[in-house]
Image 1 (cartoon, rainbow, N blue to C red):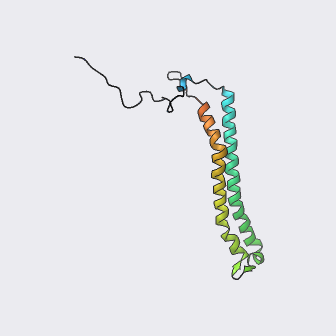
Image 2: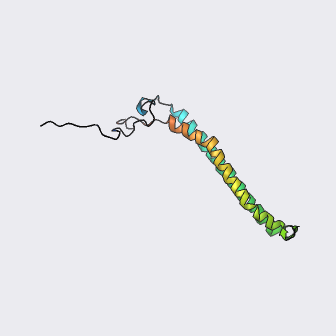
Image 3: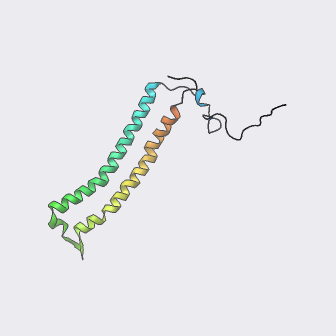
Length: 133
């Protein structure tokens, strides 16, 4: 009795390159460990800076608003126009300031952090199967 095996409709190798024309991960030139650490450190620094600036801009505005409410009530109750006070105007501006911080975060992440992430991902080749450390 003969047994015939047909081609499977799925890739047999789990680490098969997803894009045609790219070498198999085990055939990529290995990047030195020092370069990988430098890439990861640059990515970590860029991400930390991005988080800090976005968080401090949104929360900083809110803290300034609270401090003005607590220590400068005459300023916050002064009228800008009609029934609109300075405190109400600054409170209403809080939403656009937060939206701008989020938009800046997304734009900067797309332009600066995502390329670093792709470089780290591209340069970190998985070790060939069977090679254990």
